Image 1 (tube, rainbow, N blue to C red):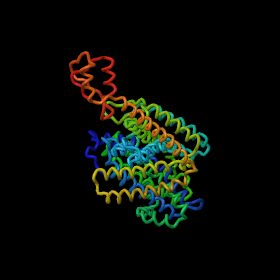
Image 2: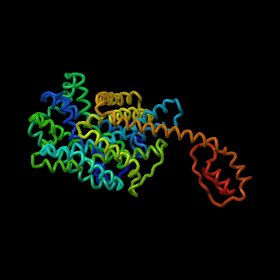
Image 3: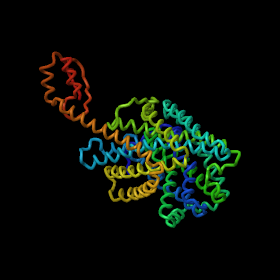
Length: 514
């Protein structure tokens, strides 16, 4: 990709890494609750679950984590920061797409980028819903009679989460970081427990098992498996979207030192459980744990999924702030929640609109299985758009085009395959995040068009700079001592604020800076 030359610095890597663990990795860190379960169900295709299906599925998930998250996001995409900020709007800023002339390739790029930004809002509504639902559903393992309580409990927990947002991500990260560290430790321990019972599962470390299993399936079954396995990498986009909150190094450190090892161990442990007991396909994550640990694990998983929801909410706040600054969204009230980090913010209007969409998803879909159909399509398209824009940034920064096309083209093909697989879910609920994204994209493009019209009208009202001398000499009754500074939104003409200042006061300072 590229390196901007000024990485976000971090005075306390350990403390910030712990905070990143709490805010950035909650989403991908709770994927084991549902990802392997959905992929195994797709692989079984309504029949018996075979050993080759389990090995193929877990191998596919492992290599998706390595290629998409470890290589593409952690090693490459994170290098493309815009003054420390990440996310798709940062890529648009780096490509100077904001002021592109109509009809140029950059203006088309702006449309593609804004669609990508809007997709994050669609993802933001689904992530908290599926994460918390999947945790609360753990109650059904030991107490099926509690099934009717799952949705009401989920709604109560989510309302509490959205109320907590005004405390800020720094505050939340301090609480959530240690909890997520414990959660990843539990994931690893459960995984080791499952691997010890079926050590043969480790052969799936080879990508051959994923490839071999997929090519020997019916086309539709392979696509269904790919679409379900993609759930294991959803949340990876938060690494880039939340870069402004924590910085590049702490995010990478948390991933490679804690998250990746714990996730791989847990997925392989679940696969071992499924090989030993194919009947545990309804909830292999909770079946991994001994019976006495089920209820404590449900409690811990619920806390972890609340944290998972935080990752996407923080990303949406960051994206909103950048979009407002670049003129893609109307001005909104933004609260800075800490005095020592510019990226830690709270946007009340966005918070409550997101809360409404999330609670609507929980009430409409009702189960994590149903939401799995809605989840993934928006993220896979967002990842493909990010890969495309990052390639253009890398070429702009002087990297050899042939290398960029080879590397990014490889990842774009992977993204496109996952997106194609997820389109199978369109009528199962995939329409929901796409509908939200379409509404946000329409708002962004309409607002952008309006801003352009206003700028054009203001441009006609501006005096030429040469007239400023005549104004100072003929229309000012006095010159004030000192210097006045007037901000200008355009490179040419006298700012309207200065024209109005002279018109009403009939004075001008001795020195004027535009």
